[in-house]
Length: 192
Image 1 (cartoon, rainbow, N blue to C red):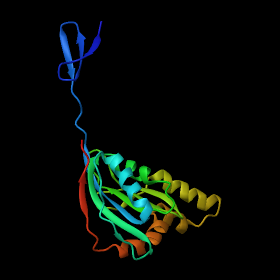
Image 2: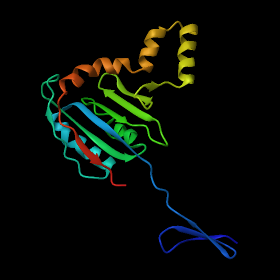
Image 3: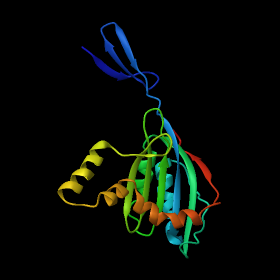
Image 4: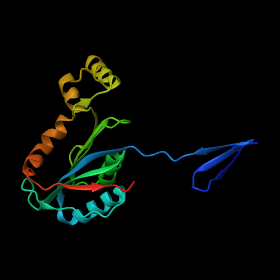
């Protein structure tokens, strides 16, 4: 009869007759990316830091500078390193704050494509899968759905494709991106 018990190194072992199998812990694959807080009211800044710290597992103190595109708002950006899925967790942790504009990117790695999340108060959140050169990769089923809607419902094909590429989010965020040029970048690493 097979049994499982923790081994002396914390790994699981399973007894099968005379042989013992040792299950080693998998080494997590890491990736890196950048979090851009394009605009946040001053009162929201510490909450953003706490949310990001909760995801990364390290204390976070961002360097906030004024956002000239939105008087009374602040901006910050930093690079992070963590497990695959960190970009998604960061975007989720910041989701729902109506006055926050942000983007999160994640580079592709050996086990996952890259990602980009963009969020604005007016449009909500946008997610795209990105390739090695930063291009947005659109799954064929989404393209087929857009073509079908254009044919059967008469929707504007160009507008539908623009949404798939995140153009409305890019249009809204561009003034905030430009205003942030020259901002300091900080590297943060998730404890893995």
